[in-house]
Length: 281
Image (cartoon, rainbow, N blue to C red; front, side, top):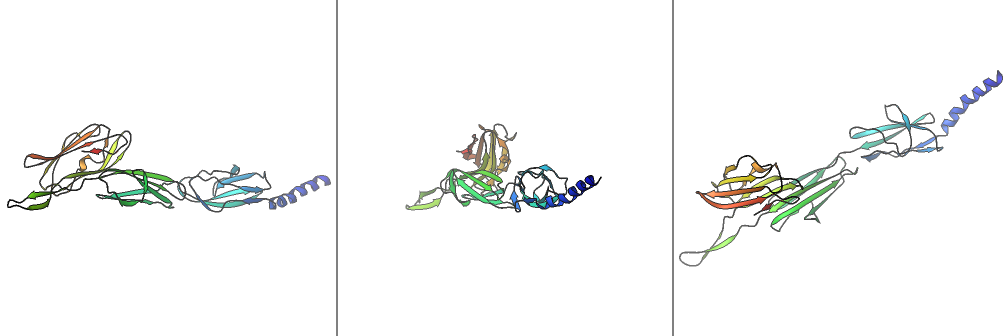
């Protein structure tokens, strides 16, 4: 009977001594989009249990990935040798939001995020400032890539079409000499997002249009309106909004006719192309 009692006392008093010898090392608070928590334990091989604080701990090892939900701050518990060690991390799985604005020749990209990182931009494939202007008439591909501090990334690709400048011509005066004037020369400008399967016009604007001009837009192809669009220019800049926001398939042709006093004064043809900006002629 004495031998049995002695053995029981030895177990009771040995357990706290062993617990005090366990050391657990956890990373400092960190920002991540994929929490994988490195846990150092001494002595090696000490059993570990882990859980988000408030949940029931379960067996785990170093590199433990907790099951987490929404973005935010989290604390977690690691149990070893009878002690509980607490760590912290911030979860961010939301990619940056990229905003784009453009004028006749200028453009600007901006990124917003809870944990800002970097924003890099290109114009026609070459590195460029994220705010600037284009000088050469025609279609230009603008792209931006934003990466936040947690490693989440997003991209945005746009097309900016710079119209040809107005043409200045010289007319002879009846009495001789010359008179310089700026001719009214309607132009079309668009911005778009395009893929291999479809193109979406974000904006389609006619500029330098004589007030009162009748405008008719027809569209042939998948994604087109069922009927032709008809407008009357109330000002010199006209937005053809009825054709924007639609997914138009490659091969679609848009024809815009401007008429004044019953006569056609200008015609624009827009061809939808795969993986490229629409062509205006």
